Length: 174
Image 1: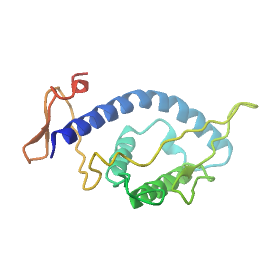
Image 2: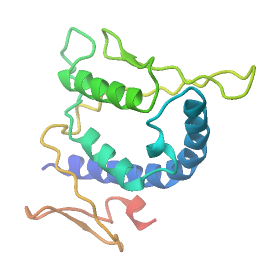
Image 3: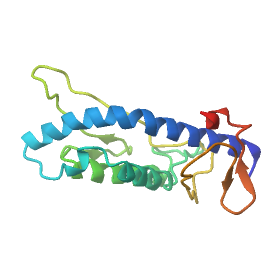
Image 4: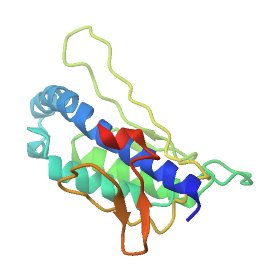
């Protein structure tokens, strides 16, 4: 694997770690309000919202990164890869299972859902993200691994003699 990919994957690993740490706390608070709203609306499948099941969150993240969503620069249609449609369908299923019955995917692969405000006259909230990944980072045959507990230093990538070097990715030292 070229050195650029090591760096790209190392940064993705560091970003995922920071995302999990920061959004777990924020998510706990936000989803508490969502669960209360869904219960008031008659939803019965909200047990998974309170509190955040970190193992379920991790498993979903691992499922997402294994879907090849790399943008295809030469594509003439949008989305540019079938993986983006696949990830979108999965997200719609998961949103609907959480009580967001308006969740849908449009002809361009974009996922839409409405989360109404839980405070009278307050605006709703829109969360938006793109489903494609950079074509410069390989997106197929991804085999994520969990390093628990990570105690610092280099991370071996499987048994192929490849490493994410802490010296190449200072974020690993945090």
